[in-house]
Image (cartoon, rainbow, N blue to C red; front, side, top):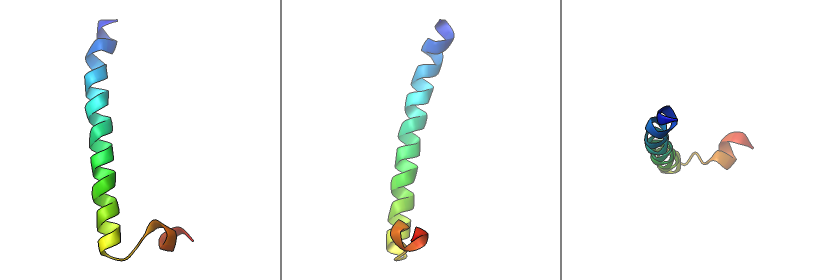
Length: 41
């Protein structure tokens, strides 16, 4: 049980980091005029 309590905060920060990284990646793609629609269509 204590292992789950220890892991939860790290998971929360990891998800926040993933969302931040996704925002950075989206901003980079938009700045280079490469939107996901153009890439995957």
